[in-house]
Length: 321
Image (cartoon, rainbow, N blue to C red; front, top):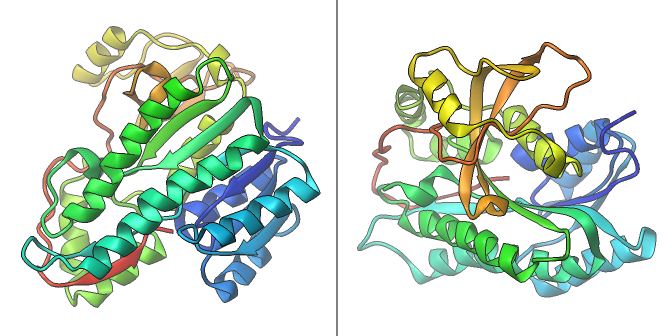
């Protein structure tokens, strides 16, 4: 049986990139998915790429009327939401001294205001066992030249998740932040292309990444699926000290039904008090086993940058989605 069979999911910013990859994965696992995005043409292309099991509703998450229209459609069709993935986001490259009010309003309007009201307006349709997933970023906890406003917006996302977990105590609704490193989405690649230094900047990102490659949207979609699964609370949590010992000697995890290989992204888990776990691709010894989160400690992902990316100090805007 598909792992999301009969589930209703809403994914914002799903016309491309991480959102689109996640929508494809959710539909493949049996969910009916509502996707949103600002550009109708790209939404239409996304629907064609996904196939059956998806409904597109054009809208801007920073526009509350668009959000009302989205959730009215979900309420009319299904009356509930099982998975709410607030993924829409964008950024602007502006160094201190050249930060503009318009870029600040745009970035915080989509990344922070859009996330807050996406969740608040979708919350009445959620029920016990529901999953709220927020797209964060590794930039939330590292210095990023010319990218401070975006980074600050993602730091806000981390705290929203931690606070909302307390607000939702007793409801059975989970809140998690999925924090990718550099991911090869059309939004990021197009934004880098506009700098005129795309190849050099990509090389810099790869150089800072232990696996020596950028993440693929499908890598992040794997983690989103894991966080969407209703059985996450019942899955085994490996002892973090044992995992760290294995990580230090290069042996990975030694116990349990899964033998860990290469981690793909950092997942901030509000259920564990805002700590972080790292989702790993694994090869099951037991094909019926469910992959567990590795630990409740902050572990560096192999696709998470280990240093600071130096970007050209001029204005550029890009979409995460």
